[in-house]
Length: 297
Image (cartoon, rainbow, N blue to C red; front, side, top):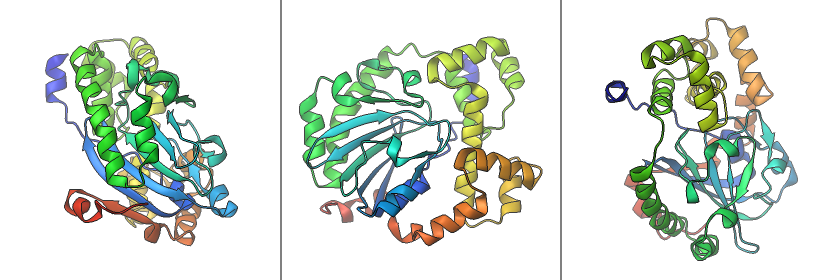
């Protein structure tokens, strides 16, 4: 099994929430890409009820820690959703409030006190309830500087992450399945995973669900859906998107997309365009990190 792990490619599908951007005037994203973290984000939630009602959270297979900053400190960790939710189901986000968030890669959320990611599917947990260091949580909530919030979080998280990875008894089969699912962008067959790991399909199903709170089949569909979103955001035409994502006809592609988004791909793109998505989203990386270091949000 360890030889299989060494041969597998660590391809990742970035977990995205484009419809969440609709709830902000500006939505800042810093792509981190290390230690299980996909990216950090920061925004001030809209006071307009229409914008808040239009925003959605869609299945992404990942977990988020969301901080409500300013008055009334709050920090919650949310697991993946199995279908589209409005922000009414994300009570940490309140109109006019400053938000800071961490989005983990799929299956890589390392939480305080080894809190199991499997218990977060369609659920949330209060960070103050599972973490002893309330002072650090307060510092993050109190800060008005995005970069400072990132640094405070990492100073806390990286120490725990290193300890966790040293002591982790994470099952090699689960890790291998995750890698193959990412590598294939959700298209790997369960029979192939069984053949490659030498475990039965039934055993792998039970093991994966026990560790991540969602079945391998459902997880693969989320990864395929997230890949669809990334392709749609590049401006590719629908036929090309469907083919690249592994669909052989548009009807199946549209049906699958509607299951996760409650709208067709065409309506989804129109909704993003009408909300000014491209103007709202500010993507930051290491090259422009320093230029934003003193900016407050």
